[in-house]
Amino acid sequence: MNTIVFNPNESTSRTQTHTFTIDDLVSVESVSVNTGSVSVVSVVDDVVTLSCVNGAYTRQVLAGGSYTPADSKTVTNTISQSFSYEIYWSSYKYFLRVYPPSPSSGISYNSGGYSGTLNITNPMALEDQVVSILNNINNSYDYDDGIKTGSTSAVFSYSGTVTKPASDTRYYTYYYQYIITINYIIKSFPDLQIKINGELKVSDMGWVKINGELKQISTITIKDNGVLKEV
Image (tube, rainbow, N blue to C red):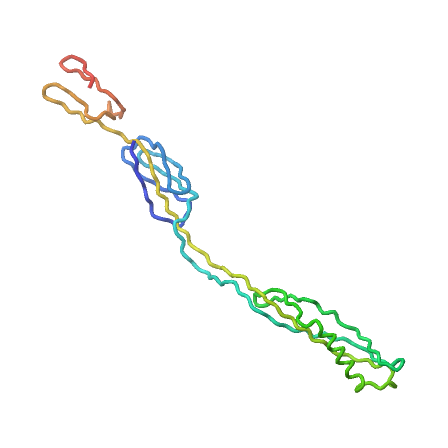
């Protein structure tokens, strides 16, 4: 049995078909490949066609695109919420009725690819505004005025860390290269040597052509001086 190793050029195709010529080929006994799998498509005379599939790539080349790593930053935002109130005099006292807003403890942030949650940093902003109103009652209200209404606003601050995920738009060209090993049998032709003394020998038994047809042999019987001899 003979063995030959083919090393075709690499290709961007993962599925490849390769054709080889092996002179005096009798049969292909087995085929193997360094990666993926290989099968015999056809054997016609001395021409062998093989198919290689599912191999691992040998290298990759960046063809385009880019990569941007993930990022984060701190963001601060403010929201102003208005509310109304009433001031009135009763039993020699000032009373304040407030219709307060309901600030959220956290707000969503989504801008420029960054996203996250901002948490309130001054939850007492409403109370601070109410205290300010109370402190100014004497300057803004006379008990003979009856019920006085007004409106103002509280400014709530929010802060938090927002993140931007990595962006990867890279794409590659992949190259594949199969190294193929073929075990095969070829025709072996005997070298007949005729000696003058009448002794005939076959030096290498194998294939001979009889009546124009190749036949495989292991022994030859000849007639020497009328006597059959096996050589």
